[in-house]
Amino acid sequence: MIWYPYQQMKHMKDPYKIVDANGVWLYTPDNRMIDSISSWWSVIHGYKHPVLTDAIRSQAERFSHVMLGGLTHEPVQKLSEKLASWLPGDLDYCFFSDSGSVAVEVALKMALQYYVNRGDMTRTKILSLTHAYHGDTFKTMEVGDDEDYHFILEAYGENPNVIHVPTEIPALEKAFEQFHEKLNCMIVEPLLQGAGGMRMYDISFLKRARELCDRYDVLLIFDEVATGMGRTGNRFVADLVLPDIIVLGKALTGGYIGHAATVANHKVYHGFYDDDPGKALMHGPTFMGNALACSVAFKSIELFEEYNYMEKIRRIEAVTRREMNGFTDPRIKEIRMMGGCVCIEVYDPAVLKGYQQFAYERHVFSRPFLHYLYAMVPYIIQEEELVQVLTAMKAWFTR
Ligand SMILES: *Cc1c(COP(=O)(O)O)cnc(C)c1O
Image 1: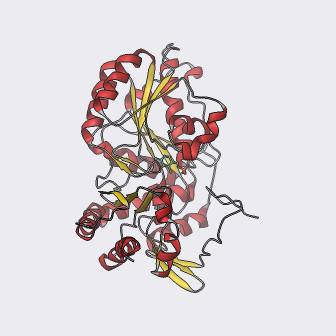
Image 2: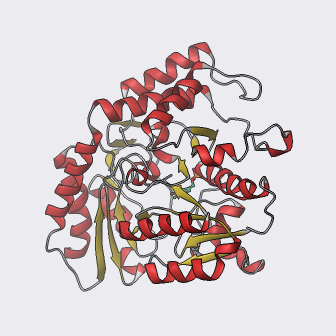
Image 3: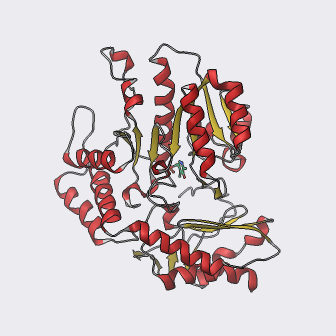
């Protein structure tokens, strides 16, 4: 018996059974559909990409996994070098883990211990955003702010060490004024808040956050698990505003295997680099630096560079804007677009009920949640396929 995610099992309709996948297409035994959400935003190169499949196959013929404690290997070395040169600034020190949630945990642990290592036990608070989503493990739930995911925390009461601010500069300034002496870090999903409702905000907020973090010696963490590798129309939002720690996941391996990275800058790394063994980072997921994952992630980055993916993403955004131009409906609160993400927010979630089957019949796989009908397509999508996805979304309201 499979216990499916985010589902009341008692009411769950049968999920679509996938028997094959190729490019943007998912195949069920009797239908095919475009994956309009890239398997939770990760499969940016599409399915069955020959280069990625080959990267995994050839590594599996050597070895699939060895532990990173006391051992190392070429795939993890190549990936860490690639990330260090590919990421902006001095984001050079790569700590690997098996999922985005764990990688966020590692970032938060780094930030706290950075101060503890300096003998500062008072900086215990974390600043995060309202509607934030950073994963489903306990600490990530606490820094998150979405009742729909994290309501069980009610049983514990609010954590006094987490402060949530909206994405508005005056509120940010006020929070820093009030708490700066106690803050160890600020964590954000930069520019685009994903699971909290595809909320988009302005870069000026992040620029101000960087200034305030500098002024008050607070570490800035970008959770780019969802936004990294082009989704916002920037390679990384970190290209625009440089954080102290960046977290990557989801698309890191092109969606082929779960893996994630927490990449720190020189300042953070040197907060641990010491003669004292007690100042080491005490963390080590069993499957960190998995050789299959590192091999495929390395190739994924090469493809991204070689085939000018940023241009593909600009094209997706342009086509999306063209297709959505002037589209309205009284049930729609807002249509938001940024890079390779489009979201139709409705006033009443009941409006979206039945959309998944409607889309299926139009050869599109979609998974609306709460008030949000969205698409985050694989970057290799063809224009007519993208139009098919957007047409299905619009047709739901005009049917
Ligand atoms: C999905 C997501 C995570 C969690 O990643 P998992 O691999 O599901 O643990 C964390 N942060 C953000 C912004 C995400 O979108």
